[in-house]
Length: 365
Image (cartoon, rainbow, N blue to C red; front, top):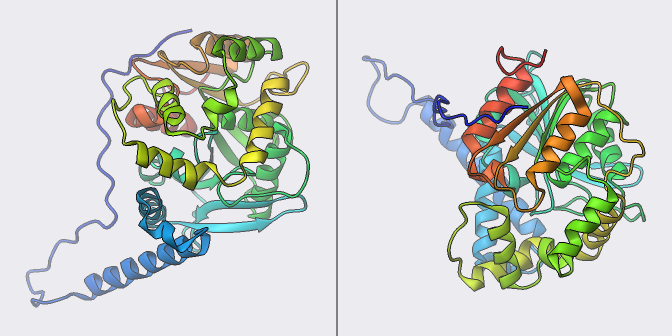
């Protein structure tokens, strides 16, 4: 098991929406046809984002919310990366996800599913990944059930249910083979997809900061050490609780965030389906991965962890690595906390891309 400092990584080139065309020496001054098309495309995307924002607002006064405004720009970012929102009505749930726009899916590109954790929805957790990863992969980014616009009227709160819903959504979209990346709670879901309902479809797995191999006893010990209800920390209702969660999730966290912004974030992101999310969290803390015994995955697996993780300790990473054996690789990122995809996006993107592509030096053998 080796910890990789990643000090010499080459910098990722900045993501550009439109490559700047080289002007022809014979081109007449004025607006070119390409510029007109780009402007029209921009206006269409802007209109789609605005309509989506208005459709999902709980109240009109939310237009004045800074968090709602930021959500609008995240929506635009996903659109610019060639993704479009889809809603799939399954037998037991309604799943909202981002997928390649019609006509943008390429058969020669690997399909990659990104599964978020408890801290928000798909847009907030993966916004630092889509620019880099959309250049190499067809991305599928679902909102887990009871997050974002995904919902269910059923009673099932298990990790296995979440995995079955995402696997079924991918089948409905006609994606036969793909790899999956999951962070924190999403790592539990990714593991269950790879060993169960999507075992024949999942090619490779990347698990980020997820206590998949933690026993129910270990999870209970973690909650006992908190000295408080873990739901108050992971599903905050007060500004000071959200600030505590940010400090615990990030090694280099912001020193101060205005309380009104924190409360605004809680009302926009955490209030919808709070009861159902609380039930999900309690089920996770009680049952963990909910498999006994926990199987060894057939797929090659990349494990990414921050050495300063204050939610799931680094010992959980080594525990998972030992369990999965030679078909797994552990990479520890220095000076990174639980939210390593936000703190170390370049390193995380680089490692995921090379691993999924099977590039020498990252490929498992």
